[in-house]
Image 1 (cartoon, one colour):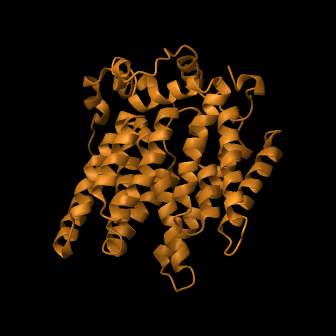
Image 2: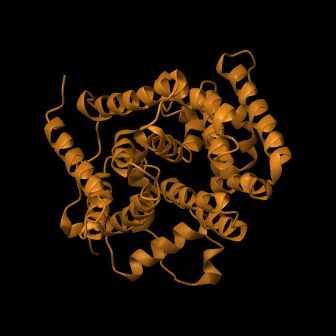
Length: 365
């Protein structure tokens, strides 16, 4: 059955799509105003409407009972990432209540998200897709990782520009919110690739990783991928079956990212090897989620970047003749948007976002 709130969900999406499109219109003198309004609406939806998300209560309690002490000497003794600790301190410094703090977090997250989206073509489609897939819904749940993900998203732009110092700083800032972001230091050698030989070596590394992941996807080999986390006490919970959270990816995103991995390795590696590396990595991670569902937590870093890269690519070639593989990928991407809209909002009985909201009295302490 269609949810009773489906009409309001569709209305929200229409407002977001309209604002996204107006932002992108050439010569629109109000584009900056539209962009600010878009960020504020997205931030309101997450900040006030994430109350019933799975981990939200834990983050709320963490903030309410936070030991406010804006002292760098005491930060190192706290059992949390430094950036998130400082963000909690900042919230208390401004006298923000629960709603105010989560609005502050959402404002940072969505500002960086919108900034990244408007670096590419067809931002309206990108924003709509991001709003449709589970990533946007997870902002009120995976709070720290969502902050880290949008910082990484913008840091990846430095890879193509070969600005390795800026990239390292971006990764470290992201890691201050969620330590898992440190894995993006593995992409640092991409900056130093020069000439056809370097690109060929990268191609074989990506092909090897992708082929191995296909063996995992089809259960030819069985690997306890997350067992390495057992040595990290705080993150060891992610390797347990009890914490799977039903995060398995559906066949559609797995198929899309694998098709795009093939496409990038064949056609786009020389043109944009950073994009190719990110998208093939995303395909590898989607394949491993079959045996390790919680690897989708890692996929959170790649899905928005991956889809936006795809939309940007097709927006650049849509006026020319495209082959059958490109057509399949494009229509699969459109189908993904439609399917996720229906699954996450219209036909779902479990849309928690905005089903319960904070009151304005909770904005300040």
